[in-house]
Length: 305
Ligand code: PMV
Image 1 (tube, protein in one colour):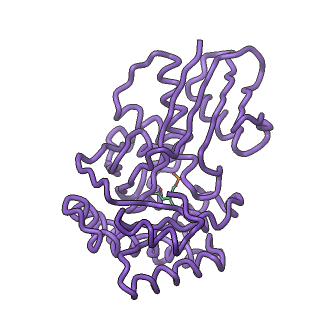
Image 2 (cartoon, rainbow, N blue to C red; image 1 turned 60 degrees about the vertical axis):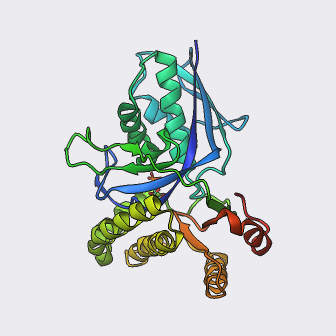
């Protein structure tokens, strides 16, 4: 008896930053992402005898005391029949804990694997809600393409889940620059809490998101990178600004991060339609159109597309 699930990494174009309920991972605002086909997590799960879960990541057994294993075991506890442990085997295409959305793909994959194992046959909103309990952004990784996570209003979170947009935009490209794969200095969970509690700039965030979300959705419908890019880039910078204004400040940037941003701004000033976004880590994701791929590869040879 075993279950299997695969889910893509998703990169937010309009970010989720801040919770209204930290147990249920209910967000303050809605958010919108793009799933990356071909990059994700694949998980197999089997019930087993024994007193603790056996977790394997990319072929290596993970010590149960490590954060990755204890977080996963705590999550599995929500679904665990009495006296049952699990053997979990996960393969992740992106480094774990480096702000590359590995936990989003990971928790979505585990929910799909549990659904398969227990034969739940859950509908997509229910799968999205269960993934959200593992990691907020994971609720978007249940779907491919463009995905919107509605913040919802209910205290029990039953209206807070992700749904796919019907629009497609095959020419839109996203690539990431691996500046560092070290584990982040502070988890996004902790950084969000600190920002909401101490950053005065956070009061401006919901309005920023409402504006950006409307522009980004329209830009996707219109296939307009000229409209999408500025909203996506400014949304990411505004999110980081709320962190810098927290106390103690939250900084995920490396000197190399700023160097890349300056290179993007320089190339754009020279006429290239190139924009960036960033998450809770130093790595930069580039957004551009397929026709510019050769130029981008030349300017950033280390890019993963
Ligand atoms: O789901 P979490 O707790 O890993 O938070 C993710 C937050 C960001 O990646 C920074 C933004 C987002 O919307 O994915």
